[in-house]
Length: 330
Image (tube, rainbow, N blue to C red; front, side, top):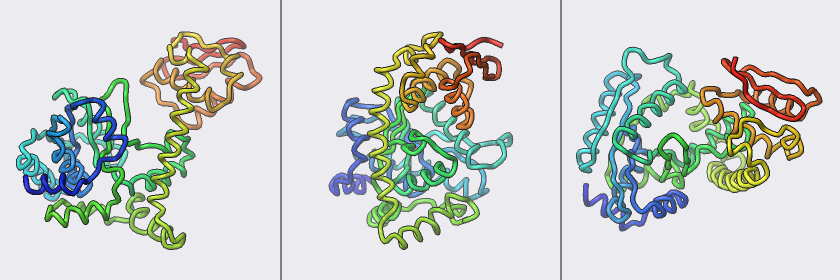
């Protein structure tokens, strides 16, 4: 295994640029690596381990067994545990168990993230590393465009995603395509686990990956996944600028003041008001998640002509009069 790690360094496989700069700026991080056993997460694990010493990283490995595929799921967990052992890295695992919610991709992701964040907290990891790669970007963008996503939805997932209450998420192999990753692993004779459910095109993401996106690339005669990767980077630059501008123009939202100046919010561009107001709302009421439709309803009310509005947040209400906006208990 050391020969493979040495080869990874000598081949100079590069981290995604923002991830690289983030790791350099921190001068040593404790990182929990999420590894499913698939090619992408195995590659991310090997790349981080190859640079563990020169970047002063303290690594551990985590695997969540969703128990969807019987013995195959068990074998995936065994494979990841064995790989962690070969790399001399601590290994943590959990299973969904008998009380798991309905088997959907959304529920699976939420359970997995909950496990990873708890494990990171337990072991003192400041960062969780994921194996997402370039092809994941367009697949995610298409699904979110279909739901009418805003710019934040279209730039997610980010290579480096900072959270106030959770470990930072990094995606060190975001700059590689899936086929490239598999070619590299094959070159080094590294096996990985192939999830049979990835071939089920009844699952939307699989349909996009295996049929729709390849056909789109063929018809456009260009690599649309690479184009989506570039677009995501450009959109993130725009989003970062809008964030800074909204903090400058609407600081009360970011100071989490109890009452906001509605006239000031109305005087600003809707894009800035949207960013600042929903930052304020989501931190003033952390248990409430506003749907896209409800967000637009609230934004329209801020700019609307009615000067007494009240919207339910469950146990609380958003109240607006002519001059102010605040939250009231039920």
